Length: 410
Ligand SMILES: NC(=O)c1ccc[n+]([C@@H]2O[C@H](COP(=O)([O-])OP(=O)(O)OC[C@H]3O[C@@H](n4cnc5c(N)ncnc54)[C@H](O)[C@@H]3O)[C@@H](O)[C@H]2O)c1
Image 1 (cartoon, rainbow, N blue to C red):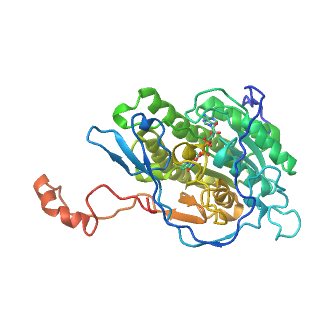
Image 2: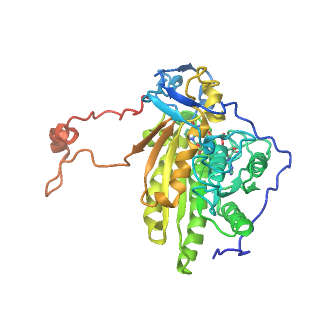
Image 3: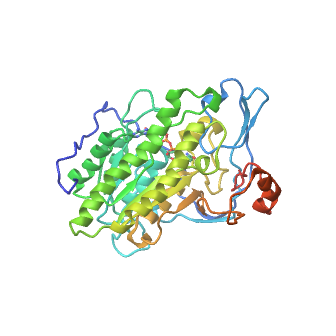
């Protein structure tokens, strides 16, 4: 049983090489004013070894007669005109930015997450880094977890987590680095143990860590399927299970709980992207896991929600290029656009938001309905195949019976 100060967890610290090299995102320090995002469709021509590095969240691909991916269409950003007001310092995930107070429109150093303790997995880079900085800017102490792997989960291990902790502490926040692999029970227990041993409690878990190994299904190696599902789906589950056990124990001990889990799914997982069977299946599993955990944890004061982000990170730039905004335009792809949604879901005030999924990029936050009935034919005895053929049109109504389209301009 986990409890504050307990030693039952191994609580390991970063054990890899100490050399830290967190990439610094080249994003504008502020973005103010009103801008509109122009709808574009990028077609990335891919041939040969294509499918080795399809980006996340990229979808309809054109498959040639031989079954190879011929081209992959990047998301078409068709967001409504955006009014960006990023005066809040909590929106920055920039080196050296002052983080306290989180919102300089507030009185004093009051953050929405003052006194909270958060874990962000995979927070050494990309979206997770911005999430860690955003939560810290609102007053939370952060366990910055990252094992520092390559995009595909392999390669030399660095220590990007420590560089993010250095940013947090330099700005007056509190953080500790953790380099455990979140994709199993022992690693998850070590990460949660780090929060409890170092900060005395846990309030917020942001499951974000992930890897990518894209190939068409008929070319996908067993190991590439297993590893991607392990890191994403088992990683989310292992962390959530361990945190849930801790919160349940606290609840049973009579302590008030406002636990928060924010998972990271993907449009790939929600809508099914070509060339990403491993990744999309794992992300789809995370979407359903989110609802399961929301139902299981609700009665002891924990909400569980998920975001499906789009952002400029190595996952996307590896295939789509720099994704830099036009000069003076709102930076739709900036990863710091995603982080405030996570911070919102982490607040006590968001207690009524539970089991929900949001597609998030730029200035857009889309609420996505999970699987819902879309058509029915019902009677008091079983259907025969011929009767189903005869009633197919009624079942589908106005809807297409073909492969469901991608929403959001993809
Ligand atoms: N970038 C996008 O547009 C996009 C779109 C949809 C979903 N996502 C999801 O957002 C999350 C963050 O992605 P990103 O784009 O910032 O990628 P990223 O590669 O920049 O960051 C992922 C981080 O996770 C870490 N990591 C990998 N395996 C780990 C493990 N087992 N234990 C601990 N840390 C581990 C990596 O070292 C890396 O720093 C992922 O879950 C990704 O699938 C991203």
